[in-house]
Structures are given as C-alpha cells and as structure tokens.
Amino acid sequence: MSAPAAPDLGLADALRGAGAAIDREAEVPQRLIGELARSGALGAMVPEEYGGRPMSFAAYGRLCATVAAESAALQSLLTVHGMVCLSIARWAGARARAEFLPRLATGELLGAFALSEQEAGSDMRAIRTTADGSAAGWVVNGEKKWISFGTVAGLFLVFARTESKTGSKTESKAAGTAAGGELALLIERDAPGVRLRPAPRTTGFRGGMLGELVLTDSQVPPERALGRPGTGLSRTALGALTLGRLCVAFGSLGLARSACDAALDHSGHRRQFGVPLRDHQLVAGLLADAVAATEAAELHCERAAAALDGDDEWSQFHVLLAKLTASRAASTAAGAAAQIHGAAGLLEGSPVDRYVRDARVMEVIEGNTQLIQQLVSAQAVARRRATRAQEPCHAR
Amino acid sequence: MTTHASIGADHVTTDPTDPTEPADPADPADPTATVDQDELIRQETTRFLHRYIDEAELRSGDQLITAGLLDSLATVALVAFVERRFAVPVLDEDLDLANFDSIAAIVGFVRRKQDR
Image 1 (cartoon, rainbow over the protein chains, first blue to last red):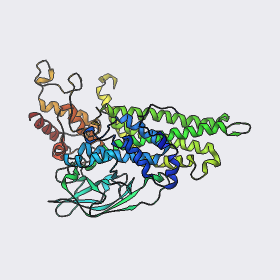
Image 2 (cartoon, each protein chain N blue to C red):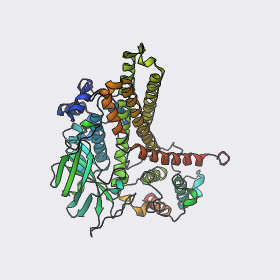
Image 3 (cartoon, chains in turn orange, cyan):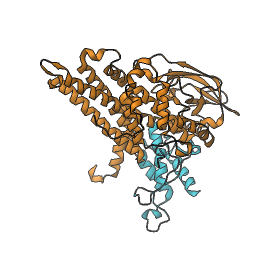
C-alpha cells in the first residue's frame, strides 16, 4: 500500500528480509543496529547541539512505520530509544544531557525504558521499586520487567518511588510534591548493584531482546535524576509514553500495511473453485475490512503527529486515538492475511504468522487496548465539555 | 528547527495574535482590565476544570489531586493550561501540590509567577 513518504535514510537494503531473520534468531544483529545508528535514526530525538539529527514527530512516525513494515521488533528499538532520548533532552540537567545524549545519538549507547514491574503494568502507580535519598544521591532497590532491548541497552530510564527518611513509602500524588513521590532516574548497565537477566521468550516481538533489571542498593548520583520526586510519572513517564504511543501507532500502521499487501497478493495468486480467492465475496469482505482499517489508521497517525508537531492542545487525545485505531488495524489486517492464507498462514515463521503474533503485542504495549479506550473516552468527554462551553447558551 | 517541545515543554512562548492568548490587564482597551485578576484566574481555571469534573461536583475548596478528582492526564493538561492561558512557565520546582491541588492554590501560584 502507498504511504506518505518516510525520510530516506538509506536503510532499504539493510531492512530487506531482516524481519524473518530477527524473528527466527530472536535478536537484532549488531550489524543492523549499526546501520540504524549510521543512518541517524537513533539521534532523531536528540537536539542538534548534542550531535542529534532531530526529526519532526511526523517524520519519526513514518520512519517507525517503514521499519515495522519489515520488523515490528526492530521498530520497538526506535520506540524505547527515542523515549529515553526525549526524556533526557527534556528533563535531565545539563550535566546528564552532555554525558549521555551524544552517545545515544550515535548509537554507542542504547536506551531502554524500565517502568513495568511484576505488580505494576497498566497501573504504573503500583511500582514498588524504591529510591532512598541520601547526601550522595539515591539508593535504588527493586526489579523491573518487560524491558524492550534490555539485554543490550547501556542506559535505563528507571522509575522508582521515593521513601521518607523513616523508610515508609510516600503516598503517590499525581502532580507531584516536593516532599516525595515517583522519580525517574538514569541508571547505567555497568553501575554497581545492577544485574540484568534475559526475560522469558515471548510469542510476538521475538527480536525485542527483552530483559529484566534487578537493582540492589544501586547508587545513583543526584544529577541522574530527571526532575524532582513526584514528577517521575506525571511528567516524565507520561511524556515519554506519548512518544511511545505515537511510535507504536505508526509501527502498527507499518505492520498493517505489510499484512494488507500479503493478503492482497495471495488472494490474487491463489485460485480455488476456478477463480482467484479475491473473487469470492467473503474474501473480498476480509480484504475490504483490512484495507479500510489500515487507511483509517494512517489518517489517525498523521493527525496525531501533526498535533504533536503543532503543539495542539488536544495532542494527547489524537495520540491515544491513533494508538487505539492503528493497533486494532494491525490485528484486523494480520488476522485477515492469516485467514486468507489458510494452512500456509499457520506455518511457523511465515510472514503472516509473524504479523499475527506481533499485532497482538501492539495491542498490549504502551497501554493495552482497554486502558487506551478508557483514556480516549475521558479525553473525548473533556473535549466535548470544552466545545460545549464555547457554544452559545441556546445551542446547548 | 525541530525541538520536540510539545512533549513536556518547560517554557511557553506566546503569540500576540492568538485570540486564546491571555489578555494584558494593563491594556486600557481590554475590557477585562477592570476585572479583579484573582477572580479572572479563578473563573478561567474553574471553566477549564469543568472539562474533567462535573460542575455539580466541583467546589472551590476541593482538593483536586489528592482527592482524585483529576487523573494523571488531566493533571498534565491542567499544568499545560496554566502555562498557556496565563503565560507563566511551570518549572520542575513548581510541580508541587501546594501550587495545583485547589483552585485557590492555582490562583495564588499564577499571581506569584506574574508578579515576578
């Protein structure tokens, strides 16, 4: 399917055929990460003054779609690395920015996002990792799970709950308080008290190189905290997740396009009952629904990116809507492609088998579909109330 | 130049041609110039909060955040509203319940920022 042009970073040759190999080997080859770095893609969320090659949100989104069309797992590297770069550029102090951003921009250092825990998935306020303040900085203890590219990342953006001096956990407060609350911290892979282990293998995003982070009395200097206690979740995590959701939306769009292409091609080649599959009306229905969902997703993605680039007041609403519609479009298109391929779509390692498994992940990461629905609904109510407040009284 | 400022902007630039920009209270042509500034901020903030909180449920002394009337996204939207509407930058050190947990606190915060 045709699409708005993504920035040409010369990645076409490197990406061609990479999806199947990444899925089969359950890892992204270092050579391919090097190609991404060389292209400037890893510096897209880093300001120029730190060696980055900043892109608009629209350009970055289209790049994510292009990469995910080949490999959704590889695209998730752009998601998490971009989230870490953006967070440091926006909320870290000058010293941490100068220390990390140049190396993140070149890909010498890969960033990973460490928020989820065993008991804290959608409910991010349930995190139990603690950061205890001391004169030398913070002492962090806890375990983080489901960290994309955690096995190869060199720098982790970790979210922890600060403790009072008596050791009791501070109440979480949405806007944050000076006294305590959640805090975002930068922790290097080789810092004392840091242990990494590979996560159990997942069915989708097999090349996502998931890791788990175990922090035991890990000492973090004060300048590696982003913002103040209390700003960790409401400002840093939500800000990073906004970019993450945009990337997942565009990634879903890329996956959906590939699934549509596979469905359309196969339905033309494969003949049953003397005619191509696409001439059967029920198959045409599958094709039409897949294409309609994918085209709608593209509009939502482009609208969301334009809202972020234009600093639109309702950009959160549009990003959430894009994530919701695009991840569902990926499921619809992948499901249609698999159904149209019949038994061939059940072959392990076939492209459509991979699309189905990866599409499921898109409806889970960066907020599952049901959570996103709840947020979209709340934003839609707020938007309606804002509109109604501007209407003349007789129109209400 | 791309700055990615729309996510977590710490500083807000104002556009004097934008009708949604705050009125200049010193402008004699501005009809709001005669309105008490605290009351103006209170009214504007209350109108914004009605996006997220039913009118019948919102009272002037309510704790907005600690009582759970605003969720995280709404809180972020509130901070962005204060930055945009009243042209006051909200820095990390300003993100304190003492500044945002009630309408009165927001009025006080905006006035202190404007007076600097």
